[in-house]
Each structure stands twice: as C-alpha cells, then as structure tokens.
Amino acid sequence: MIYSPQKYAIADERMKPFIDEKEIHGFIENTKPTKERVREVIAKSLDKNRLSLEETAVLINATDPELIEEIKHGAKTLKERVYGKRIVLFAPLYVGNYCTNNCKYCGFRTTNRKQVRATLTEEQLVREVEALEETGQKRLILVYGEHPKYDAEFIADSVRTVYKVKKGNGEIRRVNINAAPMEIEDFKTVLEAGIGTYQIFQETYHRPTYGSVHLAGKKADYNYRLTGLDRAQESGIDDVGIGALFGLYDWRFELLSLIRHVNHFEACYNVGPHTISFPRIKDASEYDIPEKYKVSDEDFTRLVAILRLAVPYTGLILTAREPAEIRDEIMSFGVSQIDGGTKIEMGSYSKKEEEQNLDKEQFKISDNRSLGEIIEDLVDKEYLPSFCTACYRTGRTGQHFMEFSVPGFIKKFCTPNAMLTMAEYLEDYATPVVKDKGYKVISKNLEEMEEDDFKKKVLVRLNRIRGGERDLYF
Ligand code: SAM
Ligand code: SF4
Image (cartoon, rainbow, N blue to C red; front, top):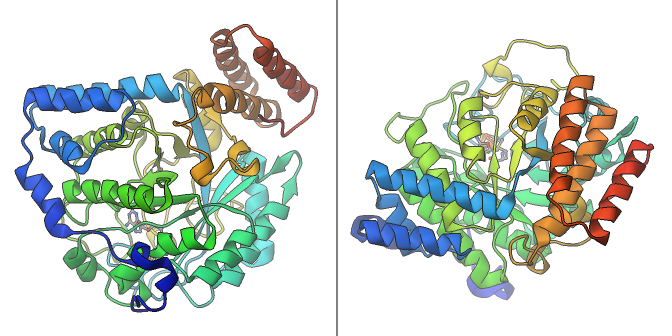
C-alpha cells in the first residue's frame, strides 16, 4: 500500500514520513565530542532531561575509551537514581508464522521453503498460554507474521482468547502485540480486544538499506511502516513501542533515528513511545545479510548506554536474542523489561524440550534459560523481578502517564507492585530455594521504604497474598 496524503487528510502533518537522512548524517559528521561537551551532555541527562539529536550525536561520536566509560557510568547512575532494582518480565508467544513479506534477515520470509509454517489453532493457543501460566508468566507479547490470515479480527480474537485462559492461579493480565502495521479502523478492532502495547520496529530507518532488505510484500513500503504508529495513535492506541534491528545499517544512524522518532511522537502527541527495543540481528534460516554493519558487543553495550541517557524516561526492552553476559551489562544501564523463559518455535511452550531448529523459528536466541532460572539469577543480583500490569489496567497510559514525569511514581506504584507480583510468583511457582531468596529481596526493598501509612498498606497486601489472595495492586 502506497502512502496517500489524501487518505489521511484528518491526520495532516502527522502522517508524513519524518526521517531526513541528510539531517541525521549531518549530526554524525559535524558534531564534535570534546571532553567538556560530553560531560555536559551526561550531566544534562542525569538531571532527567531528554537529549536533543545534537547532544545524542555528541555521545555517539565520543570514541575515547575514558569517555565511553563515563557514558556507561552515567547510564548506570541514571538507572540507580530513577529505576531502582525493579525489572519487568514478559514472554513472547508466536501465534502464526505465515508471511507474505520477504525480509532478508528473517526465517519467516516468504521465499524460505524450509520454514515449517503454522498458525496456532484456538486450542493450541490455549495450551500454549496454559503452559506459560504454569511457569508464572503474567505478561505476553503475541507475535504474528504478515499474512491475509492474520487480519485485525484474527488478531483481536487471539488476544481475547489469551485473556480468557486461567490455569490454577495463573492468568495473563496484559497482552501486547507485535504485528504488521494496519489501517486506523483495523487498529481500533485490535484495541477493543484490550491490547496493552502495540509494538512495531522500523528495522532500519535508512531508506536505501530498507529497500535492499525488504524485497517483496507490504513491508517493502517504508513510508507505510514508518507512519504505522501514527495510525495506531490516531485509532486510540496510546501505548506504542518502537525499535530498530541493529546490524542492517550504521548503528549511529539508527540510534539517532530512534531519537528522531521519539521527537516526532512528543511533538505530535505530547507523549513519547512507551518503549524502545534494540534487537541485534541474529542468524536465521535463509538469512542473507552482509556482515558490514554487524554491531560488536562493545558498540552494542555502548549504544544502549547512550540510548538510556538520551531518553531517560522511556522504557527499554532487552530480549533473549542476547546472551546472559550481555544482558547483565545492559540491565545495569536501566533496561525496564526483559523476556524470560523465551521459546520462539511455534507451539513450543507446551512441548517437551527439543533442540533448537532454525527451520522452525524466526531466528536464533542466545538466552535459553527458563523463567525460574532467570528469576533466581535476578534475585541473586538483588534485582526485584516484577509482573506488574497495574498501569494499563488502571488507565495510567499514554499522555496521562509517564513513569518519569510523575514525582515519586516509581516509589508509589512500581516498586510496591513489583513486590506484590513477585510475592505471588514466589507463593505459586518458585522452588523453596528461590522463594527464600525472593522474599529476602522483598524484605530489603521494604526496609528501604519510609515508615508511613503507605508502607503499612504494602505490608497488609503482602500478607493477604501469603494468605491466598491474588491480583492486588496500587
Ligand atoms: N511480522 C511482523 C513484522 O515484521 O513487524 C512482526 C513480527 S517480526 C516476527 C518481529 C521482529 O523480529 C521484527 O520486527 C524484526 O525486528 C525481528 N527479527 C526478524 N528477524 C530477525 C533476526 N534474524 N534477528 C533478530 N531479530 C529479528
Ligand atoms: Fe515476515 Fe516479519 Fe519476518 Fe518480515 S520480519 S519476514 S514481515 S515475520
């Protein structure tokens, strides 16, 4: 589908592509990263201000190892000041891998004859969700290929099905989706099914590269994809996630473009995207991407630290595409969400363990630990795992809600809700060892709270959870 200004006349300027390659290259080529300037920019971010494109370019161009260390240290400080130890967990669930697009990096590309294609039936979907609930998951992102089978009605139905599944004390309380961009009316259909975040990645913001890796299908239309989240916003979906697939083009260009995308959102809707994802490209069946722009571990960790400083109040999502060691470093820069217990082969949550098989999945993941193992590792490092879904369920979304902009928000809502959802997990799903370790982390977080009426309320709710009640939140 070709972008047509007439069609979106109501949405005026907002529906126009907003990436100016010359402008972005200009910042990369002309910004000078003196020591003083780099330090000034880090200090601005630590004062909880968003960075401009020029300021982000200052950090990008700082290649002196001492300055890179200062940038990483800045990101860690920001994390400690703002986000504390909480980390939200979710799992991806692949609903269907038929796809009419031909993305040269993806195992689901239409030309990949080796790929085993499937769409979960309602019954299979229920089994997958039950299996996820049995491990303690509460938040899912449903993922779909792009195919006429997966129209808005199909997606809405699958979302409704997931919400209905209850296994023991288990339930999914927030369903996000990652699906191809749609028309405004279709987004409305999906919104009515109760989705949390709508997530879609531009993959690369660089037009020539975009054209060279998206060979066929609707996804080949750069503008239609770029304005997808504007149509989502127009339909009433005010909680959206953006992202770039690192490894297709120069990471510096992609990083600045992500910031440009945030600017566009703030200018048009008074609110930035809820989350930013930064998947790094992984091997896949029929994968056909040159090595030229492959992002090294060193550049990858550095780019996430810069991103953290550039948008201090936007959620960052890190996935199991990355191995545990990289996940550990990046989490210390203030990632707000990670996936745990991830399986990306269709229907694999309800199956017994099998070897990973590239012909049955979209790409290769690097962190294959179970949710239980990830939680144990997190609590060992004194993180506070969270399955909180309170904001979305109490209407704290979009313009009316930005964790960062509401003073004391994290203290008042996020940390207590993390403790409550973690206590539920420990009661229902943890081994005795993890239960013991987990309650120690909760106690430590309680000790850090002021002795006031609010703390008493948190303690009462924790006791109610121990007594068998569920789904208590602020
Ligand atoms: N089909 C929809 C689309 O393309 O937007 C949604 C699902 S797609 C399966 C989800 C994301 O996976 C893509 O946006 C892309 O960034 C990522 N992805 C695809 N191939 C990948 C690879 N080889 N390594 C890492 N991530 C990949
Ligand atoms: Fe299809 Fe998405 Fe894979 Fe592209 S990235 S081939 S659109 S599933």
